[in-house]
Length: 294
Length: 337
Image (tube, rainbow over all chains, first blue to last red; front, top):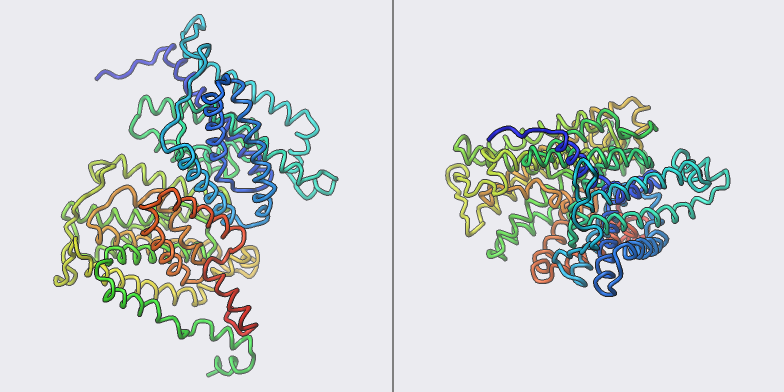
């Protein structure tokens, strides 16, 4: 076996493939990062909302023949709405509880999600059929690449720009940043923290649903989804830093590309490196690579 | 002499001095365990698994319940112990059961010490992530080191010689395994019980309740936590070693998130920081699982999820906590704290 040649084209195609996977990781995880940063809530059920979103997208497309883009929007709205109920009725009772209680509660939720989906829809993988415009290859002039991957990258970049703008340039973004940095101070300035929590939680879960729908094509969609990818979502958040949109974006892109490259050249031990790097990074900077020190 | 004088002097001092005394119901689990041996000879395989699970949950109770170290990766030590026994026996290096368990404890304790030295500098989410990643790292390593660990398939049919050269492990009829693991559990339990009522144990509780104050009174917090984590790892390693010997095989399931989450659920279900939570939780969980999970897997998972949500919301002390609350209601203030 001769060693693989790395050509310019190869590097670009690997970067694009990894970036596309990273964008899905980003879209799912960004809500987790913000809610963990804002509320200090260890929400292991976040991937569950992503899975439910994916199911809503697939089922709406299949049952009503709605197109992909509109189905994504419906997935976002439905899951954001459902998560408001979860936040008001359940999560809000545990904001002051210990981490252990939060971990147990959210693991319990994951089990409930998995069991319900298995019973109601079935244990098998649900295929997602992309619209014809997103299938096939797109010619970029110097390289031909999968249209869907390029679409994901475009969507991811649009979302990070939108979120950055929302975070840095709007009133509500300023309120969230203030609450992440110092909740008591923000509260005494008259910011309605409870409402802020609910809004952020709903938005984060809606984003997870969007990511679940966008990623279903290559991550698959079956009841074990929330547990299968849990460690990945957590690693992205831990590396990116809590409550840091751009940090999570960079971390997700990095891990997506790293995973893609390692799977290609080290199909056996790729994940080993990611775990080891995460451990080293967290020991060096417990607040994450891009996070600010507390 | 002087200690008893103090104990007579003040009711609070008396209560403190009496905390570690044996209570009337404490021999009960052991009586039941021996009775189980005679009453259910066909369920001894299940009983062995139960004893191993209790031992594993007990090790977690020491770290989580007493020292307050919230870990999602305790199966790392269970797996380390199981693979130590497995690799030594499979390659014919060493297979005498009791010394193998000591080696398993040593290997797990070493991993616990090394990881604890660096991991326990962090708290909260970072600690959760680090324990999770450390376990995932070990699992992936075991998966990759195919030549030593058998990879995904594990190491089958381990040759385990008879205990003391007399009592043979019978793969079909688990009576030897049951009594063996029961004895190991008893020895470990006496050790853990002594430990948590010692000054060392009380300082762990102090760290759990108020780390800052323990720093302020000059307690060596980090050292205590690492020591506790190492001891807990060693006991988890013994549990893993017992598992490997009783089943005569090792596989990746000993290292997975499933096992780590299950033992956490068991401990919390029974009630953590109470020693006997491990017993109550394991019996309740394993019995329910044994009868429900194969017949109605989804209903079992749904019920387990609901149970966890309810415990987190309403019953943080688990089954034993509920029991305490009930007995407090009936007996007023005389009930044990």
